[in-house]
Amino acid sequence: MYRIVALTILLHLAFAGSRVTLSLFALHLGASTLTVGLLISLLAALPLLCSVSWGRAIDRIGVRKPMLAGACTVLAAALLASAVPHLTTLFVVSVAIGSGFMVVHICVNQMAGLLGAQHARARNFSLLALAFSTSGFLGPMLAGFAIDAFGHRVTFLLLGLSAGVAMVWLWLRPLPRPPAAARAPDGKPRRIADLLRIPALRRAFIVSAVLSMAWDLFTFVTPIHGTRLGLSASAIGLILGCFGGAIFLVRLVLPMVVHRLREWPLLIGAMVATGAGLALFPLISSLPLLMLIAFLIGLAIGGTQPMIMSVLYNAAPEGRGGEVVGVRTFLLNLTQAGMPLLFGVAGTALGMTPVFWVMAALLFCASTGSLGQGRRR
Image 1 (cartoon, rainbow, N blue to C red):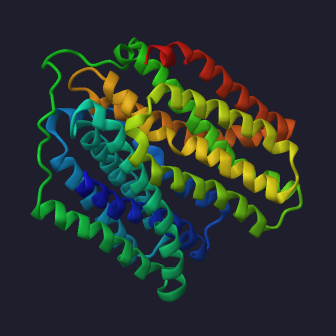
Image 2: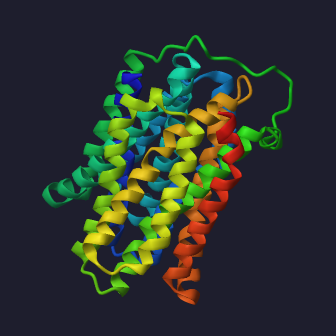
């Protein structure tokens, strides 16, 4: 599992750094804000359409070849951006990096779910979440320093080096096939509707989507809300920094205590706490209090991802774990692509406070609907 964590950090660092570098390189080449938005949206475009089918393929053929193919794709895209520094090239690079890393994302979640017994899954997914937090922090920061010091093309080379190290490691030491891996019966049709008929899976998908919406709402609307309050950019950065720092902190501690926790009670508590924080946030104008609430929301929402993944994998039909991860990935990409636009339109028409309150109400409703599942667990 620690090898999976190390590979995840290397490959997600390349992805997270590329996301920032793509935006800044496009602006450097004279792209408009709309063009940059389209460029970044392409990171999730193909995964949005293909994540379920990719998950099914990984269930069928295993993680070895798809993981290596994903790493190779990220490396090739980074090298292309460095070799051909044109705006048109960046659109191809965006699609390739987003698609390559999404294959890696499904593979590492598949490995985390298959390694060890059922009771070890929550810890495995906690370690994986910590890996994503680590590289998600380091990637953009290192990319920013590298751009200032060496320029965009060299930065893409350095990000490609991170993916290249992972690719060589995978090539020289292929990932073993987990003994718990299982295959779905051949010839039996696979339908998403069959997964949604399983109550635990259906609830977990709903909770995952609602929490993803809450996360996107906070990170997207907080800068707008802070600007309307007259806060400086550094003050808004401090608020979001408290949110991100709390997420990293809870994911750092979670692997050590997760064996004492039950998934559904923690998820229900996180939804209630996040909803309460979002309901209070637009009513406060004091920077210290805003930072405190942001930190508390981060603590509540930061530990939910490994618990959701544990619930999903425990409830997944035999041989369909990768497909379940693919469905969740589809939902996450859908919310990440659509929610900022929806929040922006609603905020313009109604103001920020109703947007926060509607999201809080959704969280409270989702937590109430999960109470029965929490009691059974």
